[in-house]
Amino acid sequence: MLVFLDFEASSLGKQSYPVEVAWVFEDGRSRSFLIKPAPDWTDWSSEAEAIHGISRELLEKEGVAVSTIADEMVKTLSGHRLCASAPAWDGKWLSALLRAAGRPRHSLRLGKSDEAFFALAQIALRGAMSEEEMLLLVNEVIEQTEPAIPAHRALPDALLELARWKRVRNETQARASYRGQQPQ
Image (cartoon, rainbow, N blue to C red):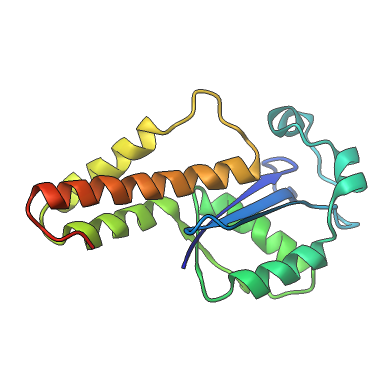
């Protein structure tokens, strides 16, 4: 099953670490955690805090231990296709979380959300549109669903990716029906 995952982080610096994680399955089941910083996680950006609104004090008080989160993630998400809108960044923070919990950093791997959107379009439209047309469709959905004010919180951002995937699915099914195909 497809799962969309998102992290918020302490900064965009080399030593940054995850402060929040959320994931949502294609069927709508979701989970979200504030992450208690590991002892050696010291990087902090007040600019990042101003964007996501999560303070280090809140993490210390209400965050969940990295080992608890990593264990649940590996147990729940293994065997599923994980996607993120920015897998280079989210993958960095996923690796930091897994390593801090003593897990191999590649216990879970992330793909790119828009590649999942494109793959969905390819399956649904099976030759009814060119790859360029399908890519345009995916990019249009992404542009049309871009929020005026981004949430910069993990669960709303993961839910946005799910909404985009559903919209691509609906658009491709409608176009397949219009062209006389059986939607997948």
